[in-house]
Length: 202
Image (cartoon, rainbow, N blue to C red; front, top):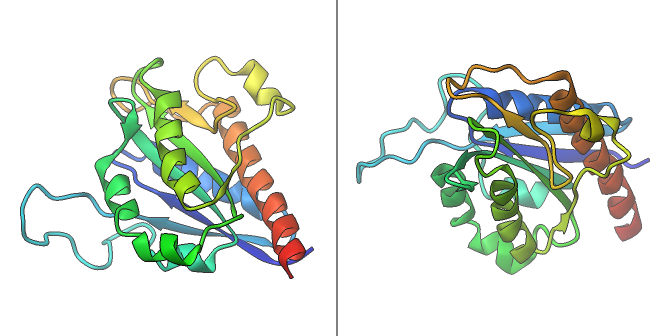
């Protein structure tokens, strides 16, 4: 199969979404010929002046809108903010008009994942909020079908809309075995579909 690169793009405040991003990336790289490129976005400052360095002190580099042009597929992750994606992730997408105009994501597979601190704290609405810009960009939305056994066994996070994690009020709960399995399943599915769509377009 054709070599493909999946962009795993996320924002994380306390580390849970970053952990999920790494698990999705592991799933991508379980597929022969597929690699994951992990990128994050900086926090949004309440100040008018720029306060964040161009390169983060630790963790993956910050994403640039041009990364959307170079990837063969995309996994997008954010913690929940009142049932919506976090402002830093929304801010990133607000800067992608050129990529929308050029059709950079048209027909590329894309999936979403999220972490919440309450069990019914808007996991599914947050996932759907991240699908909205992807649909406007022409991406093909990829979920996790119920042939993934972890979806039927999980008692915390995990949805057919995409992986989710219940971090708890203290944001300290580790990903469960089932949550990890759903993350990896999304990564594998994105990689496999990217190989099929990339080959078909050649």
